Image (cartoon, rainbow, N blue to C red):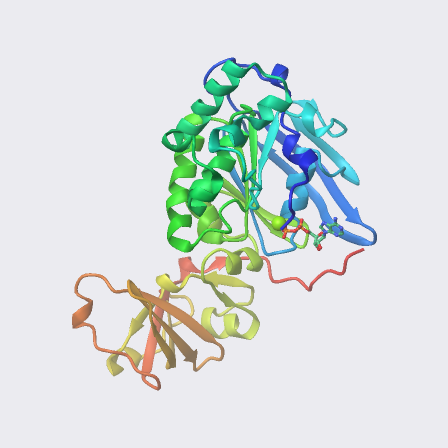
Length: 380
Ligand code: ADP
Ligand code: MG
């Protein structure tokens, strides 16, 4: 986590560059071309090409250290790219100072001034830019209303909950009416229940204000919940850019399959034994049927059938509430995770125990070819 410096916090777009005097200003499109950033000999970001249309809720998802924050800071202008270009609505802003870009950032560490009221905190950026008092006030209250906090405008940050403080931070960015909002793990400090609530609110707010959101997270569920599209980052590079559904249903690489949702990766000899040919495939746990009766185990399925069958022994049964996860060690080698919903009628299902012999079946079409996992590439 990078704590914003005072200069970064004040680096809101100039009041005079905003387009609409009232209401939503509309989003701006962003494109990144061949973006690269090195720190000494370490490559933090490489070969990043990205087009984000105006008004999109776009997320950058990836493990810690994969370069997400660095890309965000280059878009904001806090870091200079080593190579590549950044365009904002078709204008090259690669060399433009942060305050010259119509972009605002919300950090996880929201750094509110404790001695100022909520409204004064939201007004602060406008005060620095010498916006008149009456307009300042009006815009601050409007921004607070957007995040449903106008009724708490006179409180101090210390009198707010974590979720409310995060909403103040959001209002402080929205008050500048940026055309692009950059959010770096803004919900990371909140507990799970609050984070879920804020996710829904954030999505609603984005829809209302209609500006482009670029959201950084390492939480796949959060990215799936919020985003129109997601870029999956690994080791400074984008692995895939797609809608949540495409990412889940059609992961391009083994890394994406493993990072978004739970995956069964079928590889090498295992693929040959189960499918009758080589290659790397992803098979989602909920697409596998688990047969508990011995009768089901009778005949092996020929490799050309639409349905694939594999016998095995239950290694583990994990009760997850709405679903049960069963791990099965296959006779053919390796293991598969099976997910069964505990929906209506589940109580009729016989219990499964460790050591039980079972048969798994799935449709061949549910095996999605993915690029095999790559060796971790050394930074160069
Ligand atoms: P993420 O946000 O995905 O966790 P970051 O963009 O923060 O990843 O970091 C990407 C890589 O760049 C990491 O290896 C990190 O250590 C490195 N890095 C980021 N900022 C700096 C910096 N100012 N100096 C040196 N290395 C940095
Ligand atoms: Mg980060």
